[in-house]
Length: 205
Image 1 (tube, rainbow, N blue to C red):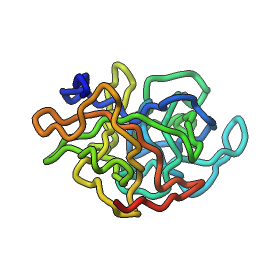
Image 2 (image 1 turned 180 degrees about the horizontal axis):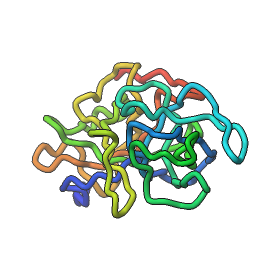
Image 3 (image 1 turned 180 degrees about the vertical axis):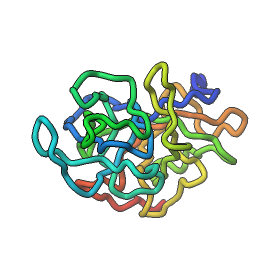
């Protein structure tokens, strides 16, 4: 029985769980539509651009990543166009007129993450471990501008055997009680199911 450390909604995005298996730099194009925060799940932008440190692939910056199948991973660090650490990159940030900055992303296809479910309508049941689930990002990938942490969560109502969902539900955190319809918000250990570098078909239970 868990002790419900997360019996209240305290979203923190998708934090790497265990060792970081790989981390690579990606560029954020100038004037993004969305915020870029730490622990943000980002997806591939489909091209590369020239930056002061060489050509780099970009992340998608035109829309929130809800349901997007081209997941790269979670943002570990955020930098401005001069490679100086910043808390976040805001929408419409001009940067150097080509890029608004850079992000260091934990992008290994086998990387584990921990994230909180949103508890919207229903909690994720223990029996749904092994199934798949989408994320929910909120308006423009909103986050805490003081801490630099995004407010992304797992979309609890999406949890199912459907293959075309973004994350595999591995197991609940050992300190949390899953499927508590009074408190919701359990933390789950997850892995990208629809990863840009390695898609994995969902397990049907």
